[in-house]
Length: 356
Image (cartoon, rainbow, N blue to C red; front, side):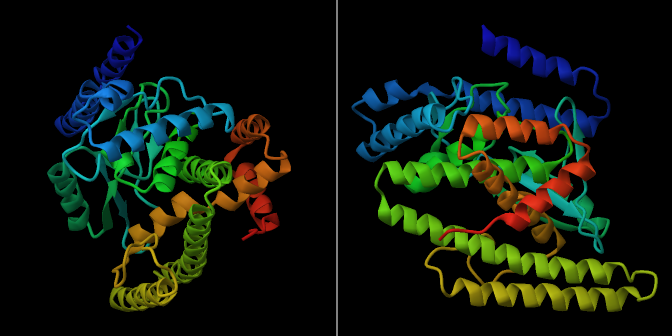
């Protein structure tokens, strides 16, 4: 009954929307999510089925253990999330479109009922995403369509486990579960960087504690190297972002061709530095396997997800790694005005030192 009432609430939100494009978008979103939920089977039933692959059974056991860990150790509001399993027919569950003006780094925002505005738009149908991308391309935007392994409904629905999770290595699957559950703790309208950085911080610190409990030395070393790659990539991105911002401030004095040439040089240099950095790491980094082509959308999206991660990790340390107290501190921070909030996050980031 609870699930039906939630679906009904979501449908009610759509009744006041206007315009064929808007209705079409929300129609695919609702239809895609309901289809995902209706295909879910209880994890215990899948695990008990003699036809289920033994490796999948093992993965489901790991997921059940991680879910309990999230509740008991990380104090996450698990609810009935990840109690059902869905077999997907593709490697992603949705794709996200990001669109950024040619000479800016602030992404276009799409606004939605209840959840406010976000710097990306999700699609269950790739062709729909490409059509919307083409419209932005025609307007001169830099765009990016990225495959999304999982998403959160912020606790409105009982999000299922699916092959997007179970096709990952154990440590990545567990980290992704922690990330999506963290979105149930706090969500600020129109502040993607806050929301995603917080969830990423919970993902990283949760994984560290999980691997310590599992005595997985190899897994912990891999996670640290992955984190180091991400941090070093963020340093490169921040440097290039500062260069791009300085360039874009000269729009009144430089002609368009000069702006485009200088922009290309900065982004090509970023791609080259990323390729050099990636030579020292055994796994693909945040931008994938080099060579890569980058634009404003890649830079903006990566910063959205990682900008405040050190700040939140420092805030957890300040609360003696007591997750319940940490969440209270995060909620208090979320009530601040945006400028004050970001000032505090910057101060926290400056105090953070990675212990590798």
